[in-house]
Length: 330
Length: 146
Ligand code: SF4
Ligand code: SF4
Image 1 (cartoon, rainbow over the protein chains, first blue to last red):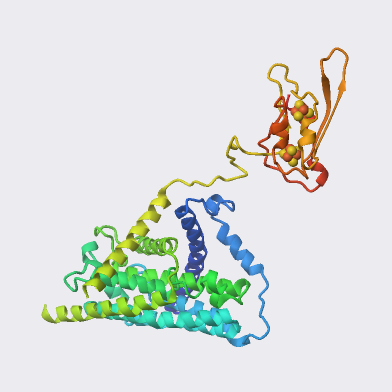
Image 2 (spheres, chains in turn purple, cyan):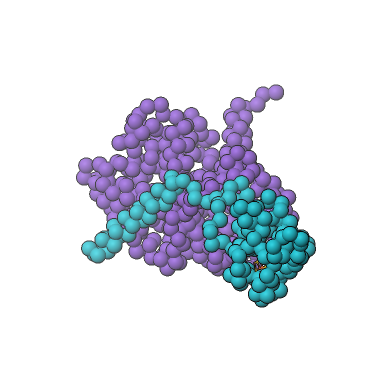
């Protein structure tokens, strides 16, 4: 029997990507707890396995053995579909992310667009889940998430458009290839294209935090105000899938930032490029995301919207105009 | 416009300062004590339940069975009994019971003792399922220590 090797390759990537996403979700929780602990000068998980390394497994088993309660009065379809709607797009986005020169499931010409298209489905999942749970905290949370995401999608996309104007392609592989050869070639330091490139990276990073609902923009969950926000009515693995989706989205965000601004798998000094550099940069960004969470308190909702509409959007538009002018002149 | 930019720049800078502080904490050693495995020495002022002290020379209790502590105790936790013995000056302690379930750790007993025969212990690992476990025979405890 003849099987197309391409299909086998895609299947292998699918399994790999799902495993990668699940493993990341599990161990990012561990990293988060450890990092939080050390920032507060505690130890963090330490009882289950060496350095508490088996903690995520035990947490997973706990979540899986819990009963999946579907409260009376919820919308049965929306309630069940929402966690999947958060998880699946995150996994889909992995398809086009190039981890190294050869390690990519599908190198799409519109890879960047695919990622942003799928990334915005995440919000829909949260909204439907919250709406379907028929819980007022969840609905408040959903309203916040949607307005927050609308507000932050704009500066993020404007920044990405600026970048695409410079690179001239949406193919993630080509974007990385253009940045090969040391850190001074990376887009974050591409000052000849626009002197505001580092600022653009900052804007992108802040928007990524807001899009993935991370602190200090964690309006969606806001434990102290909204119980658990959109996830209030979810129990057991329903909650677990949401959780994995959130962490998978953080991984996607960090990967995209790495590809667009930090040269993907390129080594800072031009030596030994490879997948390890991609992972180092990506995990450094994730480390920073967690670091930010344990440094800054949650902003108010008005502060959050003001930051986007009054600061990030004007600056990113200014950067767009500046870049296009520079591209035209030079 | 200038104010707007200045606010953005100083605001961004302050965020980096904050990150700097937390990352410094991240690399500093851990300060928490892993309680069941590690313990801290108790401070001298710590008030646990009372216990009998011993005379450095004889190794026996310093109690002269005057009953002052029993009288001073507002919660009636202390029972002291003694007897006269041949050839021994004063009374000999035969019973010293503390009902810790009622003790408020007020310290009046310690203050009233004329011979400093009782003091606060540093014992804080107290947990049990039966009330009777907290009726301490302090004389036995002292003997057990010797
Ligand atoms: S500390 Fe106070 S309550 Fe406790 S035994 Fe002494 S006098 Fe009684
Ligand atoms: S006051 Fe002191 S000496 Fe008197 S009975 Fe109590 S412990 Fe003994």
